[in-house]
Image (cartoon, rainbow over all chains, first blue to last red; front, top):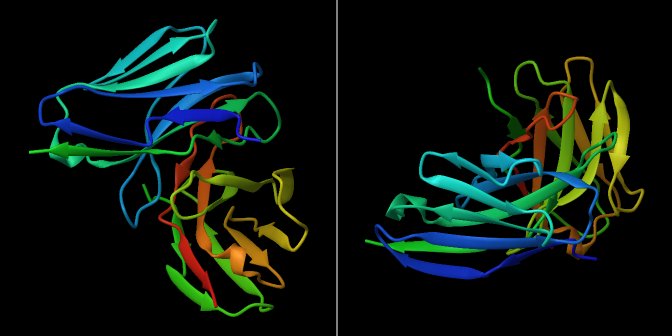
Length: 113
Length: 113
């Protein structure tokens, strides 16, 4: 059962534009929401993460918006650059001994020069 | 600071064989998690090791097993390989504790013929 739904599956943005990726979750026990960036042939790299007591978190050009009541969160990439072209995964984990990450299905972002 | 390293980078096996994948955790990290990433999908949690014991397990059969050593490095063993086991196997290390970020290696690409 997929517990984190991610959209869109692919996204094409012009250089300088804003990229927006959305995720929705079902498990109300989730309390940690990271975003990962993955380039071909590489492992996922942690970009930014948020907890549900915060509605927004910004790090450089990357912003997470979090809506606890709607059980949705999104990644905004401002001033998108060709070097941002990669696959982005949202994830979530719940309090517990393992705190395993449940990942979305990924968004392939292409930023055109 | 040394990141997460995995070996080998690529591996080709045939159905029914057994395989061992290795992971060295990031310096100081005491927890290792393993994930399976099928082509075009998000990583799926296999299991986690902490203090040399399995600390949580995803929906994977017992033929997937692991070990953690006193230096926090880890092995993933898969017996009786099936065609569907073809995937990128990712190792992630972290500190044990609330919302500790998981840092991934670049994975081992396993192909089953």
